Image (tube, rainbow, N blue to C red; front, side, top):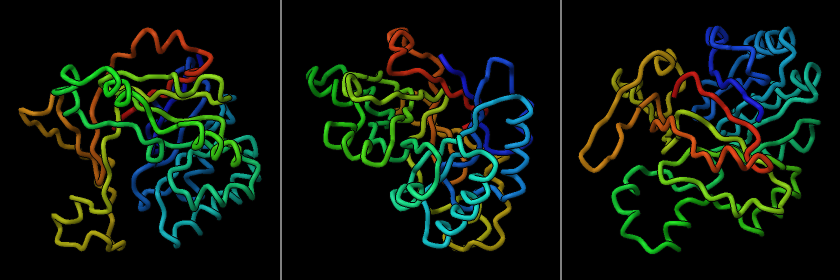
Length: 260
């Protein structure tokens, strides 16, 4: 089982351990947190110095930020042509066809049912419905589409209700499982910026407070606290079901997150 370390800032390299054979670097949820070429270069230098695999995380994009990623991809292709790119935007997927990277389907596009409120009703649902809530959207038609784009890996959250891997059998797709944080939802609005009276889409004056601050939200209908960080909301689930760990022909990578 491959173990990867997921970080979004350079200072988090201090959490690397020898058991981690791959680095996930970047951000999945905010296009204001796209790393600079200098930051990417430092991350690549760290990975090269330790002999690690390298995966660049990307977020959803505006047309402007598609161009930002193209510049990063041009730089990355010269340094690490064997890198993986986690895709969370369909427009960005189209661009990757011009590069040698291995594209990976990100968490924003896999259609898992993440809302923790599911846990309050799931035991009252028919088994067929419960099974549906444990699946993503990788049916035979979607997997054929992914194959056309060379995608052979899908990123998964460790759902509170469990995960069904049946949809991945015999389709040539491997999975990465993220722990301990699961993504629930994301918005274009940033609460940090709204508190300072800025419009949600105003790009200037982003201080990246989200990298330092987070809030725990609790409600009687939620079985676990929600973690609000920047423009995204997460839950925590530290327990990986044993059957998942035994399905190594499908889930062959665990991605350890330093923070939500």
